[in-house]
Image 1 (cartoon, rainbow, N blue to C red):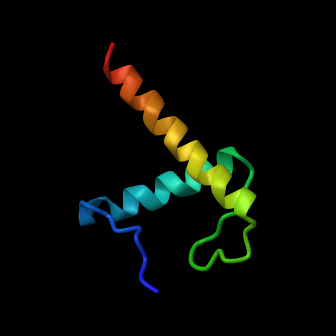
Image 2: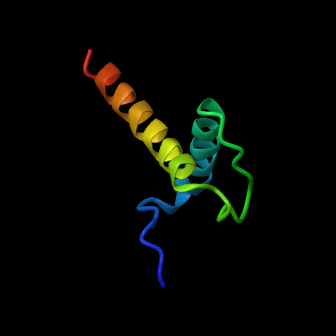
Length: 64
């Protein structure tokens, strides 16, 4: 199985990892470096949801 989580700009990989770790911390999910297959779907979804929320907030702020 191949991953569909490809980074469009390879130089952004580290920044995206930091962003994901920050989002996990904000929603109280114990994300660690490396394998996180032990997370529940709810936990993983809350991380992704927080990331999207922050991206939308950032975009909206740039429109002002």
